[in-house]
Image (cartoon, rainbow, N blue to C red; front, top):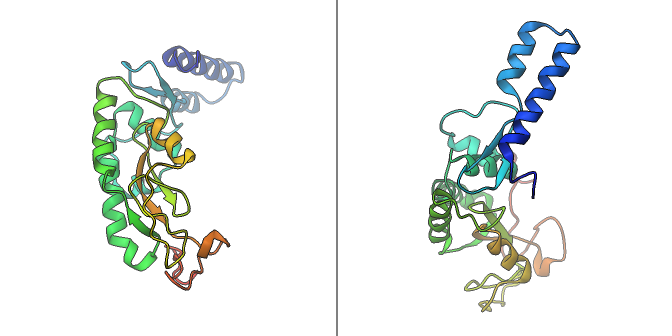
Length: 212
């Protein structure tokens, strides 16, 4: 926590160490200049006091939809912390992709109606420098064998429609960290398997190769 509380200092120290190493190794001057421009960055909201180690590659102004969907959680958190993206736009991109692709992929069984409100609240918190946790604004999906308050927990079973009154412990901890619940995803009948080959709901599809 102390390290993350001083992101600029850590970033400067990493930069100095890399430049010193390059100098002593007598490496090509052009390479040295390139490393100076692409050194690991510390991206953070200067008002929040909570830093995030950034990526080695430069981050372009604006992030394309396909880059958002292909990014790791770590990358997304860096962009959220730097203000390059906000949770509202990120959640909207995911929801649009789900609505467009889910008919053929059969990955989601339900969507959380509160996702946009949660994302808007997260975006406001980040603007005001009062994040509530490490995952603030990060959209996540929940398997349908875990309770999400206000949503049915089907567990891949056709006759199960019980609406959960409270979140499962794992879901509650995600919310406490600021995560945005997108919805619930497909699974085997009774969660007894790893392939999503469910006779009642059909299998989830590989987006890169349908049928697998």
